[in-house]
Image 1 (cartoon, helix red, strand yellow):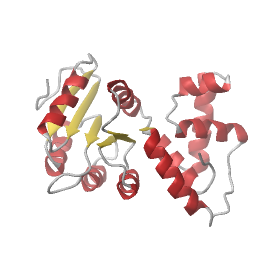
Image 2 (tube, rainbow, N blue to C red):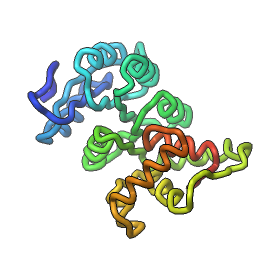
Image 3 (tube, rainbow, N blue to C red):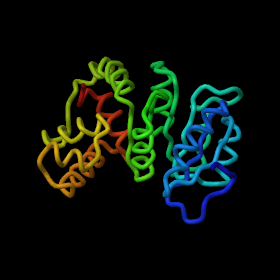
Image 4 (tube, one colour):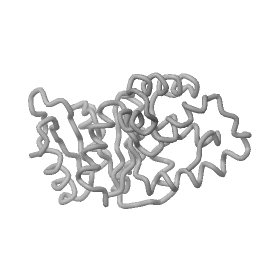
Length: 221
């Protein structure tokens, strides 16, 4: 059950932000069913800012279209005072502008509300652990838009062929373990490649790496 505090010692603290009570309650029920997740709720962007400052959640599930302060602006304001804050946008919309604004604001994940319970839980755990997860339907739109922007850059890649293979799999939302299996290498080797990718692209997380690579035309779907 959601509350204004956290279950003692819960490893992952999640703040759900949505203006529809039934949506919040449904998400809270799914997340609270996990032994390693504690849940709190906010009904709009302004309340999200207040509770983010008070509770310091590990992951914030953010709706985009809410009265008063929308989700993108709430992400920006929370990120401006707490760079460690991690966001998963959970929305019913596939609008290109919404997608790009949310990613640019700093969202680590972008999921549609049609996502399965399993995928939602996977995203929460992945983002809490420092990863990212973008809905495949959304990834397609991102790729289509950003590949057009890449034409003016020449598409020069600083990455090795193996690093490109790893980055392409990251773009699909694959975990290190899944990448290791797909490429027949160890997870340790995957982590090394991911670290090299971050260093060469001058980024700090997977979402930023994929976005920057797409903008430069380094990868495409």
